[in-house]
Amino acid sequence: MLTSRRQLPIDLRKFKRYPLIYQLSVFNYDTNQFIGYLIDISTEGGFLVSESFIPAGIRIKLRLIVPTAEFTSEDYLDIEVETIRANRDINIKYFATGLRFLNI
Image 1 (cartoon, rainbow, N blue to C red):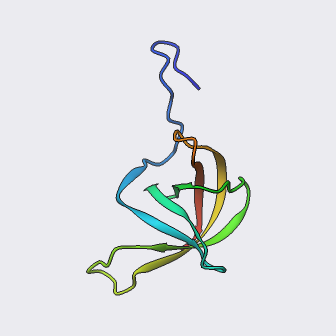
Image 2 (cartoon, rainbow, N blue to C red):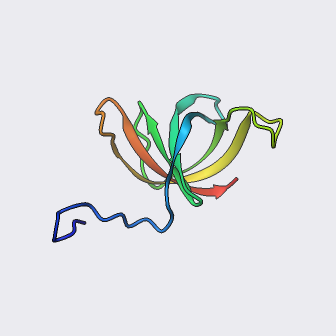
């Protein structure tokens, strides 16, 4: 959707997205196969960039590799997500997938 005045895209998201300083490596929880990188996050979901197309409308359990932090000794976070949109990234070598968090 575009605004009529300046023809800029309108952001229809309910929650503000935050770019990650360190892009998180994302793996399939069940197969341990590398999927791609989580590049931004909100309280409800995230944005995944990968070399493989992941269709919208599927549920998948993911393992995010996180930098070691003072608040936890774990170096990963397991989450269940639903893919809500999938298309080519700005860089056409990659695909962009919108994720909605279901279980963290």
